[in-house]
Amino acid sequence: MKVGILGYGMDIPRYRIKAGEIARVWGEEEDRIVKGLGLSEKSVPGLDEDAATLAVQAARRAVKHANISGKLVNSIYVGSESHPYAVKPTATIVAESIGATPDLYIADHEFACKAGTASMINSYALIKAGEIDYGMGIGTDTSQGRPGDALEYSAGAGAAAFLMSNKDFIAEIKGIYSYATDTPDFWRREHAIYPSHGGRFTGVPGYFKHVAGGVAGMMKKMGTEPKDYDYAVFHQPNGKFPKQMAKQLGFTTEQINPGLVTPFIGNTYSAASMIGLGATLDIAKPGDKILMASFGSGAGSDAFHIEVTENIENNRNEYTFERITKNKKYLDYANYAKHRKKLIM
Image (cartoon, rainbow, N blue to C red; front, side):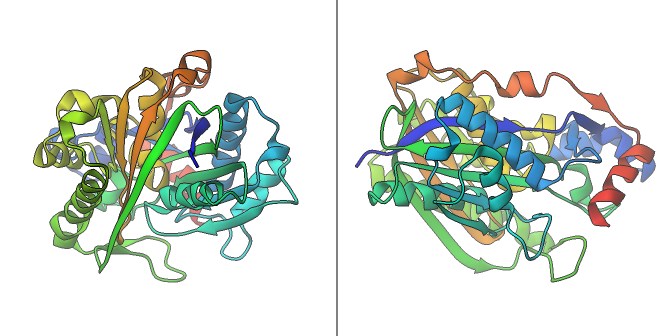
């Protein structure tokens, strides 16, 4: 059975803080931070926003884009490492908001930054098995970094929801592949407010090994090469790593630029590669081939081979990445700290 993306939605807070403002407070050189991380600013959740509210807005936009009733959605899986409740699912909040309850498969997922793509795979599999007709996978996070830590410059906020179906889809998911090992590159213990990272493990043993493994496995499975894809989207913990990954794997700058969103909104963790996919679909044309590979610390990667269909021309998303990021409001560090305090209380 064929399965594809029927509609998608994204949500990103309007608040931003520039990397230079964070650098100023900690006595760092702005140019070194901006050039070193490849990003200029990041998104900051509002005082009334968390991973659940962002997921709700993304899900509503996905349903609207798909032009179906939320009652038809038979599965919702939400991936995040910043669920607002330790015991109380985010997914049920989303389900009620679109009218999908009570007849559906539903759960929250957690696998660092690849929990969102894992959620997509769960709903995809249920449709592929013939159990349901419509399923949703969501990645959402209000990621956090310890004040003064390198993560503070990149930890952003955002959500993306992908509604999948076995008919009328705008892009067919023609293949999936996952690659995972036990690699201690990044973690957060129970009750800890901020995550820790294993320094040298975060690059080559973590990100690069697993994204490369996911992409290689996907291309071997599909019998493809980098030149066969019009676009490629990689997880983007900063603006530098995905460019290095593309060069290492043989992809061009032109292939990855449309989905390279972290330089403008920061690393949205579980939503990062999914928002990159949404931004790519915003401009994609029928027949285009897209390779997406997420990454989650701990560590693993989910890869997708996606082919855009003719239906996309008749069903363009109203809430494009460009539109939802156009209206921005910048914070100084004092107001940013107030927003952050709300997140950790």
